[in-house]
Every structure is written in C-alpha cells, then in structure tokens.
Length: 431
Image (cartoon, rainbow, N blue to C red):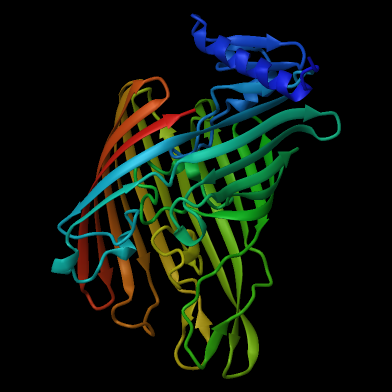
C-alpha cells in the first residue's frame, strides 16, 4: 500500500481535532497537534498567547461587523494565528402604508408622493451574510501585524448573492494599507439595527487607503489617511461634466476613550478636492469639500449605552447613508458651467438597554438634510428622517434573533413628502 500524501494526513488530523473539540465536555476546548503544529481553540481564555488576545479585541466594532472566530489556528511558534469566521444572516421584512423602494430601508428611496400601487411590499434576504479571514502575528522587523479580508454577498452594484469584497487590508506598526472603513467613519458610534443600511444621517463609507494611527497613553489616539475618492455629481448637461479625480480624500480624527475602550468621543474632519470640467470655459476645475463630525459611544453602565453622531460640511454627500451615490457631492451653480459643493448634515442618536446578557432593546432617531439647492429640480430630495426600535435575543450561544420596527419619511424641495413603515425580523448565527 502506497504511503499517504502529507496533505491528506494533515487534513485528517485537522478533522480529528475538530471532532475532538466538538465532543469535549469542557466549555473551553484546547486541542494541540504537534505535527503539523496546529492549535484549535474556541476561547481566548484557553491560551495565554498574545496573538489570540489580539484576535479577540472588539473595540471599534460596528454592531453588524463579524465577531472574533470561534476556532483559531496557530503556527508552530505560537506567533501567528489564523481565524476563519463570519455569520449567516437571514432577514424577512414587510412594508406597510408606504414603502422604501429598496432591499434596505433607505429613506431617500421612499416614493414621493406615496402611491396606492406601492404601499405594501414583502422581502426576504440572506445576502448580508459574511465571511472573513483574519491573520494576526508578530514579526521582529515590523512588530505586531494583522491581515484581514471580509466579504458579503451583495455583489457588484447591488447584484444579490454575488460575492463582494468589503474589506481587505494589512496593518502593522500603526499603518494600514488596503480597503477598510474610512477614517471619517466611526462605526462603533452607530446604533444597533437589523436594517443593513442603517440610519439615514449616519456616516458609512469604505475606501482604499493608507492610514496612520498613533496612540498617546491609555486614552488618546490620532489617525490620518489618504483615501481613494469616490464621487457622485449632478452636472448641467452641455455646461459641465464629471472627470477623473486627481487628489485623494484626506480624513483625520482625534479620539478620547475610557472604560477600557468601551466608551469614546471622537472629532473627525474630512478634506476633499473634487475635480470637474467647466465646458463653458473649457477648463478643468476644483470644488473644495470639507466636513466635520462629532461622534461616540458611552457605556454608562452594564445596562445603558448611548450612541451619537453629528456631521456637517460641504461636498461630502457620498459619505452619508441617504445621499451616497445620488449625485449630491457637486451640483450646478447656475448656467455658467460652475459646480458647487452643497452643504449637508447628518444626525444620529441612539440608546440601548440590556436586560441581561442575552436580551437587549434599542431605539434610534436620525435625520439627513441637503442644502443649497436653488438650481435643482423641485422634486429633489431635501431631507429624510429615520426612526428605529428593535429587540435582540440570544436563544443559545452564537445565535441571535431580532425584531425591528422602522419608520421613515422623505421631503422634497417643493414641500411634498412620502412615508414608509417596515417590520424586520432576523435570525443570525456567528461562526
């Protein structure tokens, strides 16, 4: 009989290891295979390894971000750990008395005025399920490092159930290279929702970037980055047109954190130089955009948590949930071929109450508003409001179910408006 291939032997050992972990009576299982040297664990407490501790760090996590994986693989030296995880998330929704014409509850997509033919809608979705790979380790040249790749199934341009890259970055020594949550996006300050889109006025953006972060003591931190710009214009045909961007977006923040990183307050700023062509003068032009945001989360007690975001600026509409991709980074300024960066505002406030570790409820309010629209059509979006109330329960380890009520309205420049109501239900399992 021929000797078994090493790859097959390795696979058999890993399978046997996983079965042993599943069958063990102890709550926290640690299984060690010396050749090839692999450790599989489902608990941070199962090992004193620094890399496993870093794998389980959760500060700065958005409510919808995946948790640390249940099972990890360590190399022979114990200096590199690989986690493979994610979650399966299924949702069911029903719109009544007016709809948001989107898989997500986007208040900008509420028909105005409400039409009898579009007052009800039923949907089911599993495309926001996630998969990720996370590698953490230590190297004598660069120190601690992290490599992260995350996907979902929203596909390109929203095509449902096609694999889509969400994040992919390398991080070491305070530097981050790749695609990640923008430095201007404070994900941890967004309140919990089943709705994938989230509050209308929330800053939500992922960019390809080079970011540098520096910590000062236990409480203060600073970050700055250059990020690949993405823009959405409304042009005056025959007078102006969009062209390729030549200057990156430059966001920064200063943050003060306390309570072991569970609470923080952050001041963020964003600079943009948005390129366009004035066809009247046959010149390439810039319109300057900038914005500031005050955001944070306060864990006041084991029961109470508060979330807040307040952003205002010019030419940053693509960073706001309700305005992203809608053509409001630059809009016409008369018939001269000039484009301007309109002002916009985003507000979010939320509160969460934990009855116990397995059951909590939350409520939030948000508003997004666009200004400087004198040259726009009368049916152009003016502002939208978003209200959420939800409850989440953990029936057993790693499984979460939720129920949510959403209300939204959209108002146009001419004073017309439309409303929508949605009930969301969710089941989600982390692995």
